[in-house]
Image 1 (cartoon, one colour):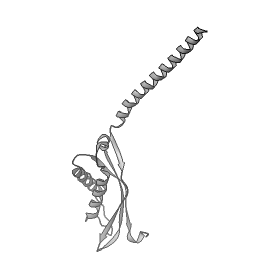
Image 2 (image 1 turned 180 degrees about the horizontal axis):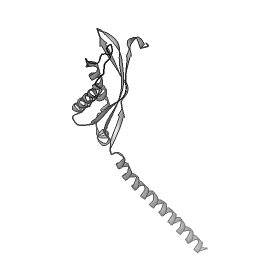
Image 3 (image 1 turned 90 degrees about the vertical axis):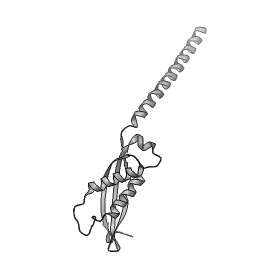
Image 4 (image 1 turned 45 degrees about the vertical axis):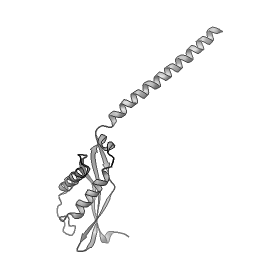
Length: 149
């Protein structure tokens, strides 16, 4: 009878120790995998921007743009201020103040210079090279007559 009790306690002790060792080993492995995940570039999509186009003293329509920017994931997580608001602000300023953008007289528009100017201005305002690239998801013009109120 005593031999059966000792064997039972021995099985329970081995089971408990093996469970503890498995959990301890598994938590150590998960921490090292999480740190490697944060490396590389991250794409951030900004909310759509509505930019009024004013000509001849009246609103002619709106440019609706959706932009995406890339930034280093590690740097992005360490910033005290998110760069999305700066990207939105610079895109609004660039499109609103551009004299070459006239939807009444359609012609080719230099989108590359617009994106480069947005990237450069955001990085200057942030004080470091945060934004690596700016991409366009959509860029549409809606005339005032097509807008529903």
